[in-house]
Image (cartoon, rainbow, N blue to C red; front, side, top):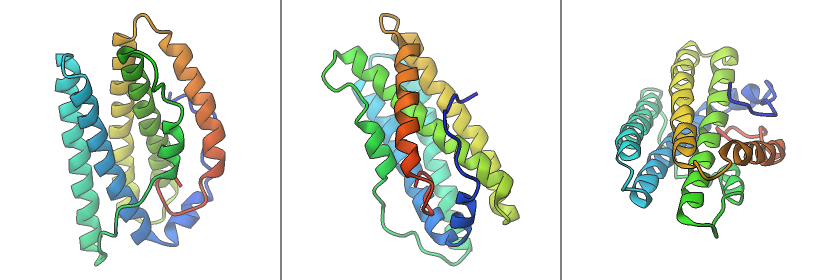
Length: 193
């Protein structure tokens, strides 16, 4: 469904299980950044009422996920660590069209966002199936479903408003680019790492 070219090596879950506190902290900050990204898209494209409406809901969901992860962190006696840089996201960002017209930039930002949601969904699915912790298995299953919905929202708006752009071609280019980027990841206890 997500169209990703390269799946995460299932052994990544073993790395995650070696440091649950780290994956939870990284995950919490990923949710915060996802909420901020949705707000940024709204800010840059406020004339699209349906986009604003749907991304406000999405941003609220991402903040709820941040709170849910933080609640698990507290329940387990951990502390929310400092915010981390997400090298995967920073590498994906290089793909985005920064010199095009406003519509091209919006479509690329929406596709970039869809890709991050797709990869997160793929990772959450793997965690839900392979992690030995029953609470986290259920938690990541539920979030996988939510991330799939976010992916659909972003790619749907890219297609809706990018009528004069070959959005499917641009998506395929991003999928190809991501397949090269992701080869360097899956080696640390971070959501995208």
